[in-house]
Image (cartoon, rainbow, N blue to C red; front, side):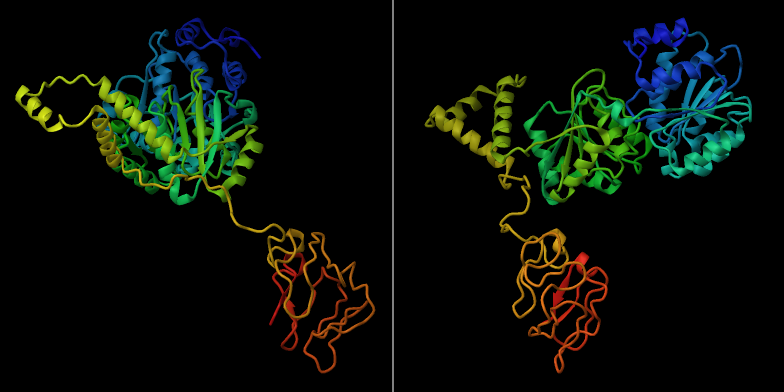
Length: 556
């Protein structure tokens, strides 16, 4: 790996800006992309997760390739959300601060379009935009894309997931054929492959394995709770660590809003950010969060794109995402700039397999942690309350006569009584009437032995109970067959004998006993090919899926 940015071929002004920002060693995507993009003569595909430094990977070479003397828009950068667009614009401004004459602008929906049109009257060498707003501005002739040399599609997979396929096609049709298209994405679905085929020419592709981009400063943890207890479990983690500062991810906008409202009712400094908020409301929430007026921000995956806060201590997964790439996106919000961070998943007992899948797919280890017990939470909150009293420097001084009256009323109480009553009152105010232990430790009270009956089949643990009348008893074999009269490879090993239900339990075909309810189908196919077919009442009938998936079920 190259050791410094100076090895990548960047110009002196760009290197000065990078150095002033404290960047020293390029990430893998930066190391592989920047030298190629500086060549300025080919399309490019970069597949890498969020948090790997993609903005610098395309932003640094893009700025180096611009000509400040040209009086028109030379590059557009498309982003799926306003927040990501704002973040890209801020970073490009920092990267270009040592360059002369380079001007950039972010335009997005939800903001005053008249102000954006006015800003575009001055030459903007780079326009960072959300797809819908850019089309609107082109149609209003506020921006001209006919001389664009570079088109950057950042988080292209997310733009397609959000339904921007037609908008992307429209925007690309506004640009000249002779241009370079740089596409960055965490995944490569079919729709992106279609775009590559339609709009790119022999692109150079760099693929960063997710396992090689794991941030070792992130500690991955999970706690197992009943689904109905997730919100309370979250509050216990918040109570136990007053310095906790993080983002809580939910799956839907409704879940996000509901959780935020419940936390606020409980006295927690929380708020939600999601797609239904106006731009002004989103900006207010983000300002409060960045100023630490909020302890936690409740967000959807899409709304969290572009959140750029370097000192988050925690990321909570209130609901695990279905896509592992989203888990990486979320977790990458913490442990930035060399700091440590925790990615905590709140899961149900049935979701433990998702943790194993993440461990295998991402090459990380998860540690199971316990939800803090109620006693620990009470102790922590009371200690915090007491320390707050000691640290409080009240400006207002009560009137002396009022102090004297209170002294008369409380005089009979000893110091110990006073403390006990104050603590009792604070306990009542906290109202922590919860169950002591929220941890779900799995099924309880089950006896060892057979776990499943016919739906599990013999391969999954045999039968749960012996039959009351006739038939076969469980034998505990997990490999098929029964202890007595068991199947071998297509029949039975004993000589022909009749049991109470009309079975011929010997070798060869099965026939109903004369005058007895039984079965019509022979056992010519063995246990694997159909088993028994129900005839007259009595005996056995075929269970779901045959013996492989459930064996036979007794009909009483």
